[in-house]
Amino acid sequence: MKSLKKLISLCLLAACSLGIAASMLPICGSSQESYGNLKYQINDNGTIAITGCTDNNVESVVIPESIGGKAVTEIFPYAFAHKMKLKDITIPKSITKIEGAAFFNTPWLDLKIRDNPLVTVNSIVIDATKCEGDIVIPSDVTSISDYAFSRSGVTSVVIPETVTEIGASTFSGCSALKSVKLPNSIQNIGSTAFNKCRGLTEITIPESVSVIENHAFFGCSGLKKVIIENPECSLDGNSVFTTLGGNTGEPFIGTIYGNESSTAHEYADKYNCKFLAINEYGVIGDANGDGNISPIDVSMIFTEYKKLYRKEKGSFTANQNKLCDLNGNKTINASDASSVFSIYKKNYRRSH
Ligand SMILES: [Ca+2]
Ligand SMILES: [Ca+2]
Image (cartoon, protein in one colour):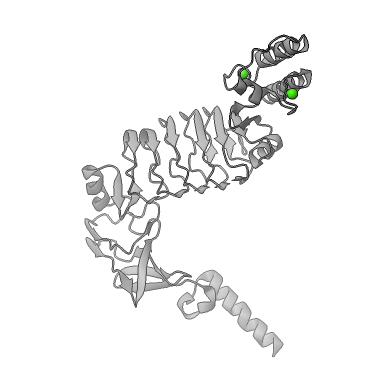
């Protein structure tokens, strides 16, 4: 009896892994079903995702609002890609998620692009690959599909506060992209989101971001400055910031800026990246306010210390005092100068 049970479960496992008769085996989770020539699956939460279309010569598609009483909310990646005769699609308001390249290489998408290269459906940017120059995404947009801007000619992008995620490969290969303003609503930056954005020199990751996935900034060879505002942001993997070369990439040449005790600091130490601690006044130890730590800062702090030691009037501003009192004893002393020199030496070693 036991061996029979084992045999049955083995058969079920085999059927699941081969995808055979999956619809007959609810144990396998979501299954492919048909509605006319549309293929769909029922998501775990009971909503429906359109996964494809069986007719390669289809000219017109009407996606229903619901199937069997269940709301149709999602269109899968590549669901209608390469349907070379598809000119007309009706997408109901119930669709809230359209995944990457769902309509790639269809006459319908080509027509939409001709009308406006920032193609938006139900407040979702589904394709911007033909966009160029400076782009401000309209404030009613709630999401951006994966790959949407991939290899486009955009030079700057402003994203509205209604968007919560930068998905996989969204800006991948945008080599002309110089500036991205991420709003303080983004929670997640997906894998390869900014892959090979070689023109990007600086980016601020706002406090709202809790996860930066691996390879998110892979191949961003021009990236000099990354500010990570959330001290607990998870940096997922060893190749979040690297330039290309070999299997794991060359070390990241830029500097990570973040809180003194933060995951960003841990990441920098673990992967030998330059790191500068910031507080609300600027870069800690940056006496001359140029955003960097150099021997000039050390010398300025030491000069200030000498003045105070001789009971002369100090020349630092309140802001300089906030940035340069590293040991927090409310005055500028030799220990502060020495700590700043240590920061300089550590980063110098990491850049050579
Ligand atoms: Ca400085
Ligand atoms: Ca001090």
